[in-house]
Image 1 (spheres, rainbow, N blue to C red):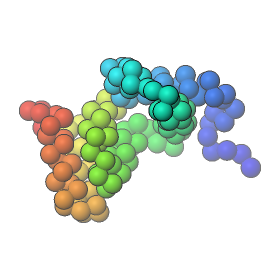
Image 2: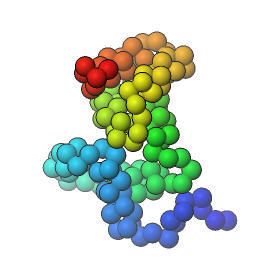
Image 3: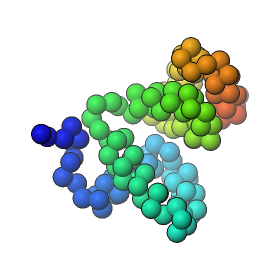
Image 4: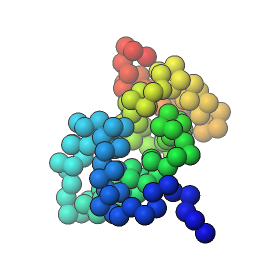
Length: 134
């Protein structure tokens, strides 16, 4: 059986390098540099894991473009109440081509499926992230 991942023959080093490139493109150099500066012996394996797997594999799969991946991430973060990650991915959504108007709709849609309190908090976080642009 073949893997649905286009680059299933990549080495861990290649996944790490590709993952770091995508992570920087999506989250920004500043964010990744801050995250890298905060790596400790306790968190090093986790940072390597998310760089290789989340960014080096999943974010590069051909099935969804980055706009659609951002929509999925926003909806999931709203549903699970991960507000710190939500703020980061609200910024990333704009880099991935979503507009603030589209983000607003994602949050409204989340109200129906994840609850009004979750959406209310997401709007508050979005207002903090986007400021007057919102």
